Length: 223
Image 1 (cartoon, rainbow, N blue to C red):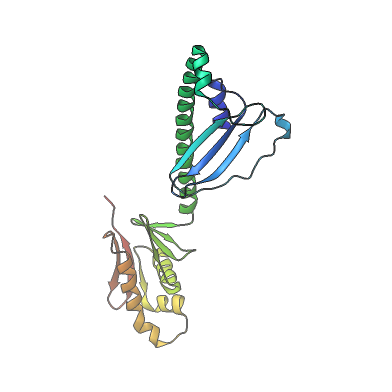
Image 2 (cartoon, helix red, strand yellow; image 1 turned 60 degrees about the vertical axis):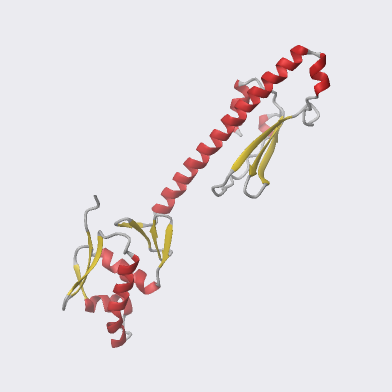
């Protein structure tokens, strides 16, 4: 709203107008408001909304003193050539304003996505080209989200805590599985194999089997 008002003020456009933001994919208005000359002390700030990435269009309608859309008729244009020129100039100016508003909206969405991406990344751990979301038990790679089981999450957390160091099988079993018996000892290799498969898109991430000792999460330099 602040951006639109500033553009309208520079272009010397009247104070009263209606602005609508339409989702082109849903073909419906998702946000709108009307601006009229009022005492700024009576304004109430709305809670900010967050919208997903979409094909948005911005439409602005000028309003008269009664809050009704201003209609431009051909008859009135014929009666006054100066009025015609003025209206054409206003139309061109409005088009430029709408383009400017659209650019502002795109820029706003871009920075909003960067801000929210940084918030998401603050809760993840980088492992090679992947991000490990421990809280939500997921591996993130580009736009792909790979689900992890609770045991896979605990196992990966333990391996990452001692990166490039070999962790004994006995310690892994104790920390991840506790006292669940010998059966889990035979399935540890299966869980390691599952993790290796989920990291298959990045050859710099390796879970190495140190025979007779345990496992080691190794990260090569990414070039």
